[in-house]
Image (tube, rainbow, N blue to C red; front, side, top):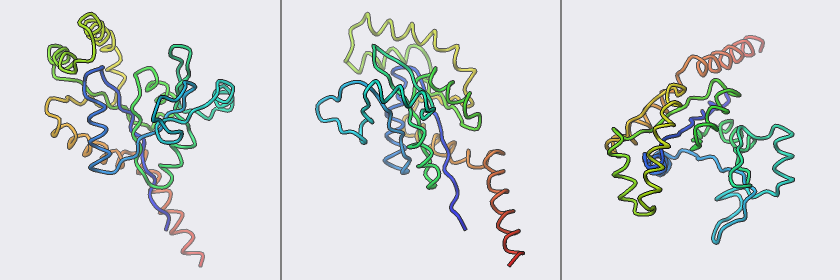
Length: 209
């Protein structure tokens, strides 16, 4: 009997919400796969093709767009970034659950193309905590932090488009709850229908023996 398919879970959130830390926790503890993006930007020191990114020329990337080989893509500062369809679907067809950590507009592109995919939004408990986390990172100047908080205010408009909202108040609790949520997605009606179809086909084939 064939294996069960994996699922795709799209994870987004405000800058400073801790989504990267949560995703790292999920992969290290529970063995989730994280999608590797394709990009046209130049590799940075230490980055490896096929591990950090799939590095493509502009011509190669635009050919991928033309051939609809990307689940979603966007252009930032003259470089393309996108999620390769073959890589992700290869993973889920082998039974692995795949996490896509992407920004909100890309997440909505995925949902439009693949309505069965679940969108999960990670948020801190409040705006004050978000600003506190950005300050503690110590990587940005105060004016940049203010811009990120203002951007978060604008990004609140995307939240109703998400299937699930996860509050990252306690990191350990958030990782555990995210794992439970993602595993529960295997039992949505759409995924159950795939199981029904597979088992029905197996029984019909068995009766023809």
